[in-house]
Image 1: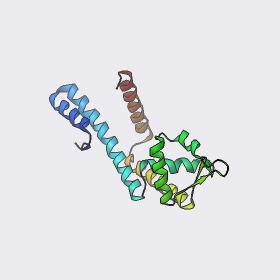
Image 2 (image 1 turned 180 degrees about the vertical axis):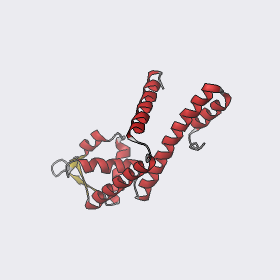
Image 3 (image 1 turned 45 degrees about the vertical axis):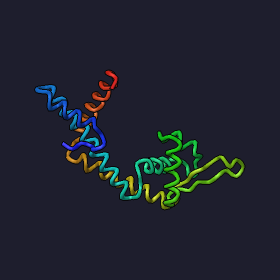
Image 4 (image 1 turned 120 degrees about the vertical axis):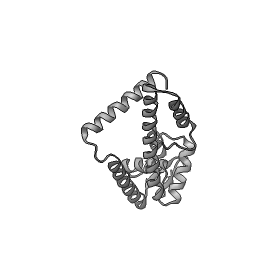
Length: 167
């Protein structure tokens, strides 16, 4: 079983699984497999983004901007993305230096910032969205609609149960 080297929790769960038996061991192993699958998929998607010169946050910003009017106030973007403002500013700077977005200051109020995707940013967004969609399809190939709905229902039930017990 792979575990993220920076995260001690999966290692601790694996240790607890080794100390359990029967149904308890199976439950720990199941949760570990779910966590490992999710982490592996996210790692793969991040690698795909990195090959395109993007972080997850950069991809989120580009995707949001692609769905908004051509020029959008920064406040509209902030309302969509769930990123601390300082971190968002850093992401916007990287995207601007990469030529994927443009920032424009307001003519009357210089504090007002408007954003827009550049043509290169629009192409990068389309290409990256296509790559991510292809990756998701490949990850889930062979699973029919019923299997996918069953997996989604089970994951939702796990999330609901975890929330109910305070995890």
